[in-house]
Length: 168
Image 1 (cartoon, rainbow, N blue to C red):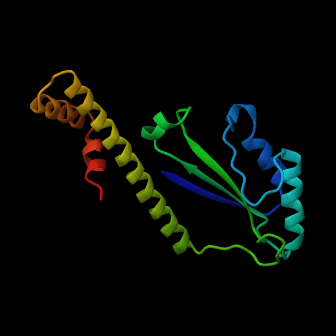
Image 2 (tube, rainbow, N blue to C red):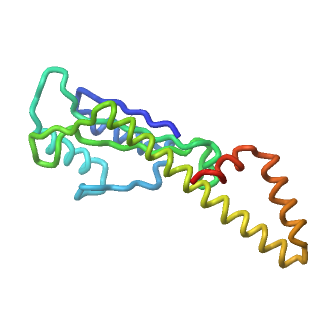
Image 3 (cartoon, helix red, strand yellow):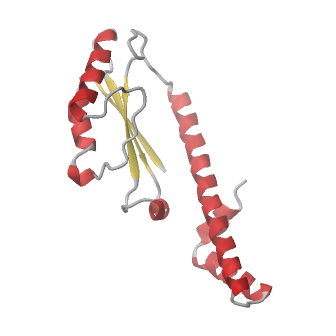
């Protein structure tokens, strides 16, 4: 998992919303939080209205563009080869002068927690896959040794499976 964080000094909410929702971006799964509207123009308007409440400083941030890119191994759970998420975050709290800010240490901690969470999810999916294989093998009359052999073969093909399965 890769997390990129970009701050923008200008209130270019509309440009970023258009980029994320461009036809080539396949932005099919939009999730809105703390927004009343769903149309691009109205969302842009909401961000701009909120931006007016924030203090204006030289070189101050207007918004943050966060990108979370998942591993290619997770692509089975998505409809594209490079599964990723874009977040647009206003630099100030809703209708407030108070700015949002994370220190580099806090940001690193969040990144670590997201990576741990992702590994747990992958491990859970793999366990379900192994259980399905085991159940299918049992239904087809294979012995426990044959089931164990099938799992070992999967581990040999992809050493990452062993590593993920050992996570706690």
